[in-house]
View 1: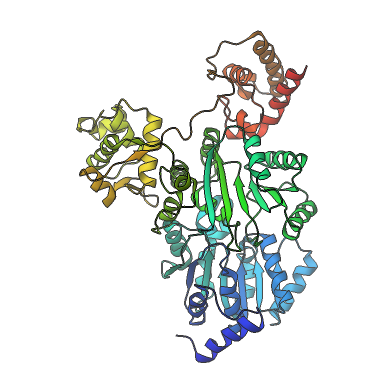
View 2 (view 1 turned 90 degrees about the vertical axis):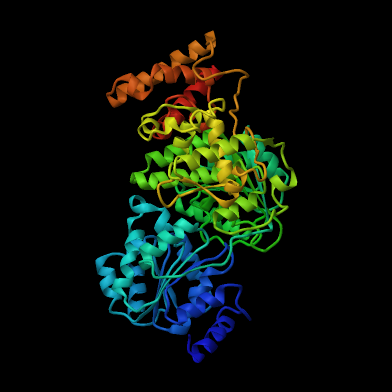
Length: 605
C-alpha cells in the first residue's frame, strides 16, 4: 500500500510536470508498486510510456533516482526531455567533457539533482558505488532491462554486475523495464537482478495496427526499392545487417528520389546525430540503419519498418518493428529473409565470445524466429505465443490476408511426435531428426534409439525439410522447445491431440529455398567457362598478395576450392559473398570488399 499523500502527489506530478490527466494502461500499477517500496520488473509494449513509470515516482519520492541506460544517445534524449519539463535531471557519460561530468556529479552530490542517468559501465565501479552509497538514493531504475540477459558477460559484463545493486543499496526499490523479453529472458533477469524475488508485470505485446509480412529474399535492392516507392512521402526505418549495406541501401534510395539517410556506429558522431535529428524532425524521411539506431527512438509517425536482413531473434524483431505506428495508426513491418541470412546469423552466434550454453540458447532463439518466418498460419499468433500470450488470427498479416498453398503433412507430423515421445521428450531437434531419418550416429546408438519403432520412419524426407517441419510444429504450438533448459522438444496438449488422431497438420513448403543467379548453377560443381578460369587466375593473384602481406601460406587466406566457387558464383555483394563455400564470418569481414572489388574490376576489363 502507498501512503495517501503519495497517491495524491503522483497525480499532481503527472499533471503539473508532464501535462497528462491520467496514466496509460499499466503505468499506474508500476508507479504504485515502486511507491510502496517494492522491486518491479515490468514488460510493456514499445511506445506505451515505460519512462514515466520511474520518472513520476522519482519526483514523488524525492532524494536521488539513479537511472541505468544502455546508450548515450538514449540517456541524452531523456535528460533533455526532462530538463525541458523543468526536472533537475543529469547524465554522466563518456560523450561529455570531463569538466561537465564533474559538475554534474557535484550537483547530484549536493542534492540538486532528482534523476541521474548513467551507463552500467560508469555505475558499476567501486568508486562510483561507494560515492553513491553516501547519498539519499530513493530509487534505482534500469531501462532496457532485457540487456541483462541478452547481451551477455562477454559483450557488456557490467550488465550482469547490476545484480550487486540490491546488496549495495538495501531497502531501495529497484525497477526494471523492457518492451522485449520472452519468458526465459524475464526469468533470467528476475534471477540475476532480484535473486528471483520479484513478480513480473507483463502488460501484453500485441501491436494490432502493425501489418506483418515476410517475403523470401530474391533481389533485395529491387524488393526494397519497390516497397519504399510504394510508401513515398512517409517516414520509415530500413534495417540492414552491415554498415556497408546500410550506406549502399541509403544511396540506392536517394538516387531514386527517396529522402533517405544512413545511420551506423562507424559514422562520424556529428554526421550520425545530424541524420538522426533530420529523421526526427523532417516529414517523410527514411532512416537506413543498423541495430545501432532505434533504442529509445520515440517518433510517433513511422509508417513502416523494413528488414532488408534477418534480425537476430524474435525479441530483436519485436523491438525493431515496435518503432512503427506508435501513434496507433496503420503501419507495416516487412521482412526479407534468405538462406544467406540464416547462415550469417549462425556464424555470428558461433563466433561470439561466449560459453556453449549461451550459444545454444541463441541458436534456439534463431530457430524460433525461423519458425515465425515459415509460419503456415497467422504470424501474429506465433509472435504473441512466443511471448506467452494467446490470441485469435489477426487478419492483419500476410498469412491471414494472402494465405499460401499448404500441404497436408499430418502423417509426417505424427511421426515426429512419436519420435519426440519415444525418446523421452528430452532431446533436441537434431537428435529427433536423426532418429526419424535412421541415422546411426554415436548419440543415437548409445541411447539405443536405433531400436525404437520410430527409427527410420522418416528417411524419405530430407533433413532440411524435417528441420523446417519441426520449426513449424513449434511455431504452431504442437511441440515446445525448452530454450531455458537444454533445448529438448516436448509435446503440448495440441500435439498430443494430433498424435491421437484429432485434427491435421498443414505444412508451408519451401519458404526459404535457395535462389541462384544462374539457372542450374551449383557451388563448385558447375563446369567452368574460359571466362571463369580467367577470373580464377585473377583471384589467385589477389590471394597471393594478401598471403605475402600477412606472411602466411596462400591456402590460409582461401583454399583453391573456395576461389573456384567464388569465380563460378561471381558474388556481387557481401550477402552473396557469404554464400561462397569456405567463407566464414571473420573472413567475410576481412576479405569481402577486397575480392568483390577484384571481381568487379575483372568483369569491367
